[in-house]
Image (tube, rainbow, N blue to C red; front, top):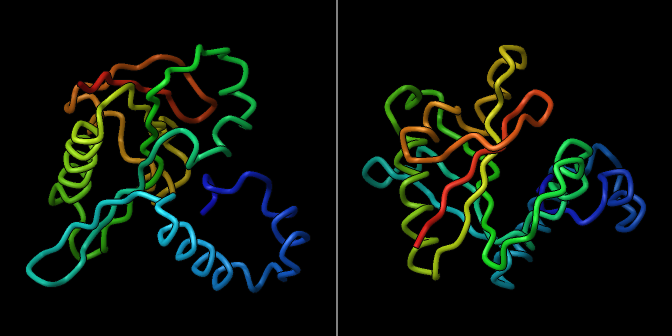
Length: 165
C-alpha cells in the first residue's frame, strides 16, 4: 500500500482515523477496495496450488507516492502516456533463490504488453544495506536480464526502464 497512497501514512492515519498499530489491517482493507475497483494490479506465482510469491505493478496512477519522492522529482522526467511501474515483490522464504521473482516480473511484463504496453519503470535497491527489505524491490541484475536499462540513481535505488510494445 505504501506506493498506492496519494499521501503519507501520517496523513492516512488522520484521514481514516486509524492508529499506527492498526495500519496493517487498514492496509488490507484499502488494498481490497482498490482491487475491487480495478485500481491495483499484481501477479501471484504458485507452486502447485500454493502461492509462493507476488509482484505488484500498475499504471503510473496506481503508485502516486513515487512522484512525491525527492530523488524522483529532481529527475524532471517527461511523462509517458503509458507509464507502468513495478513497485514490489514478495517471495516465500522457502522459495527464495529459485527464480520466483523473475517469473513474476516476466508475467507482469506480459500483462503490460497485453494491456497495450508502454514504458515500464522499476526501482531496485543498489545499497548493500537494508537486508531483506531491499529484496522487496527486486534486484538490478534481475531487471537487466529482462532488458531494463539504468536511467538514473535514486538515493539507495536506481531507476530502470524498459519499453514494452
